[in-house]
Length: 206
Image (cartoon, rainbow, N blue to C red; front, side, top):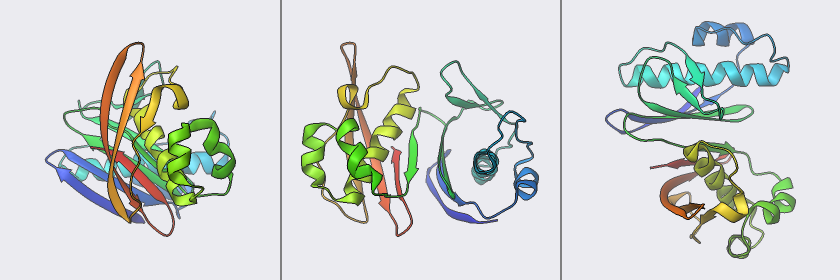
């Protein structure tokens, strides 16, 4: 079982990263699930199953059973039989997941790629682009932070440039981020943590 990383954040709170190396058959066995027939892309099928295998593993870490995942009308995932909030992210071959017993969560894993240099200015504010200074890792952290906040919010119609912002930060291997969700007159401050490895960047809400 290639569980790349697992970390407890306190009672009933945990996140983890899974490196996908298994076959679809192996992941079906590990997750106790079968991939939906309408999901046809082989890589997406592996991500789907690995996400559930990871959620199952994280639940076992906090002494809970896995009985499946459902989604609401916005596509936000929930556990079928537990009130804990969950979040999932995929950046093949990595899958990340987070569970929290008390509050909504958001997690995102990405591999820094050159395309972020072109995409960044379209999803980041001018202040965020200026702070990143074309640093690919920093651009990726900003991107992950906005994805994590989007998943935390759990509803559509959020514009990354207009409704989500992240304060400037000093780049390190690990660190804290402060973000803000502003939409329709409402403002919500969001605290996050980030991790930088040789293979990926991870951001999760705290």
